[in-house]
Image (cartoon, rainbow over all chains, first blue to last red; front, side, top):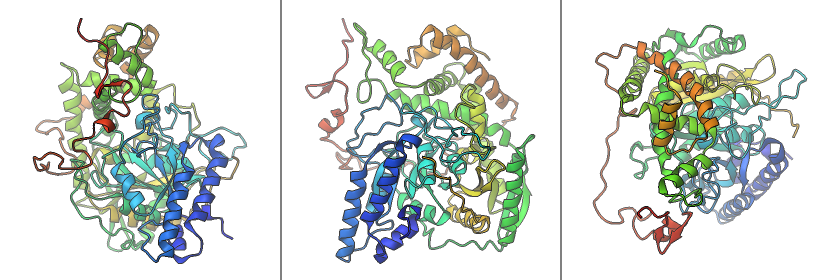
Length: 495
Length: 100
């Protein structure tokens, strides 16, 4: 019999519907994989096998009665621990929220349960989603299931912030997982682990019930094995939500039904500013190969210019910390989360002690940067200037999309790096998101698809960026690459 | 612009994060590294450019001005709201004494 954990979203959904296997068998198979891998990969903060079993039994019962099973009926998923889940601890991988048990369910997770999914557990991440390697979690590093083929045994980073999601999907601990992307947190971890992930247009997925990092950038999206699975899951996650003031009041397109890898008549833009000095040759080669594949799919490939590209990352590192410093002001030891009350301390001392004890170093660093750039006398020089540059970056994309339909770029400047390799220098860690951040600042849909392996045997991702609301164009170009890349490699099981 | 220890201490106080001497000292070069790097934004000619306010054009909606317009986030949720409070007493959030 097929190993059920080798199946993706579409195969599980269709197999359960056809009666080839039961949802219960699927849930039990993934639960077993999670239990066996937890010690080695640390992908989950909390596993919830009973939730997965309960949802699977409900789906099997519905099938027995001949009732519809939903868009994702019988598919168990991992939930990034940034989504509030009623009755299940939600921590954002922080000490601050350790033990926080929400009284409500996030909109996106509720939509997934309504679509017939079950929850395998809450996935580890960078603390408050701040990081690019999953090394800032209070609950320990997540390990990438991939290893270099150099005979060494170095533990590699799964990317971040959605590192638990990427590691778990890649290691077959779940067929798909939720991610969130503020400046690349879905795409970069997907690239590092040989999986597929899409960040939709800002506003497609409700932010209600997602622990806030930078509200003008945060977007949820799916991480799965392939483009079709991402299309299915994004349909289940997206949709208007009156509880999120920036939610898009638009119908959710039928992305899965309209998937087509035929790009005849489409133009693909190659942004020349992304070809940076000293670019990793493996990355450059994979990018050229991607352009060739899209040409083979019928597209015309043209050079485009996004002149303000080099300013995207510094603008991001003003805007995101500024919003974070404001959003994270809510953690004060009064309403929820940690309280540290030294003997004889007053209210102000309690705030300062609580926040000192509850936040990790990277979170503190970003709150301080954000506080500084928003402070009197510096606001215009830093924050207003960054928001003006952000306007110019969005304008670059708007101009580019008058010439092309979709943009092709690398997802990250390198394959997965080793744990500890970039933790001493915050700037070198930030630079990992150089190709991912511009689309975030412009609110555009963007996805990473596996393109092949580099010379060390590690997966590389290619990024597709589309015009606003054009997830279909992004998914279709992603599919065209997927069909030609023939990426079937998976990490050799060592755990 | 660069920051010194006194400035970082002031920012930390504004952010309500207690930092020890060691943490404060370590944070100064880190913040200066980041600030020096973001200062390249000053090169960009932004004459006549409006700062971004909404990344995707959208209009803010108003809900009906009624109590419990949304049953999920409406009233009568006191116990749920207090359920995760570190110190909830008599239906209120408890805090240390703030007046003498």
